[in-house]
Length: 249
Image (tube, rainbow, N blue to C red; front, side, top):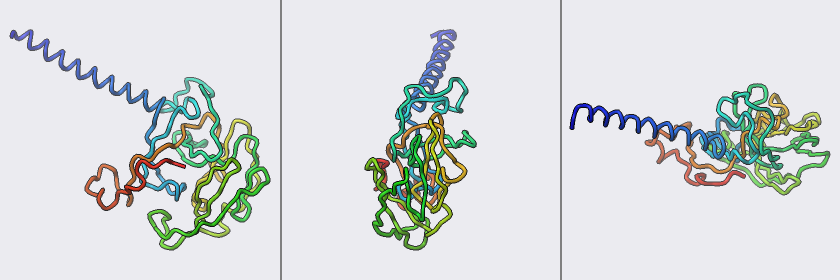
């Protein structure tokens, strides 16, 4: 084999490697933009449904696509393409309205045109109390972040969606609110950890429909203690096997 042949072979091998890398990156971009986006839970606002250290997939097609479906939210178009309205009770990822560079995750409580209010810890939608039943207590700091038992209340929305909420503090700051009227094209979001959630009762405000990123779908990994998934030596003591591959409801 001549020197020229060797050089050509080396060049071809490098070109093929670069081509494979570029194709892999483009495939990952397409999957992340149009199909699934991985998301990690950054706070305790959705406890007990979602815990810090949960890693989940968000379905991007659930509500259609806006500029916020793309990395870095480029201003390439307005509104939503193939839009579909979220259902009451969905756990949704959205862009924080005051700062769209941040992703938030909450539960869809109020739809356009609804009135939403908290009265003495009871959720009211359109003037009607949402069914709320005490189902017990949780005495597990990994779930509640509290070194004491915490009351658990199950809410059932008008469309039949049920989920558990935590009541950390009776008569907390978010337990009594004004009546919110959800504008057209917006949604009212709340965390299941009612006394420890920055949501539409506070500075999140109403969430425009084009800020929706996708619906939380399935937990694919979960680890406690603030551990990183890359710290494999901590898996035996910190991994939460019972949460892996569980659906988000």
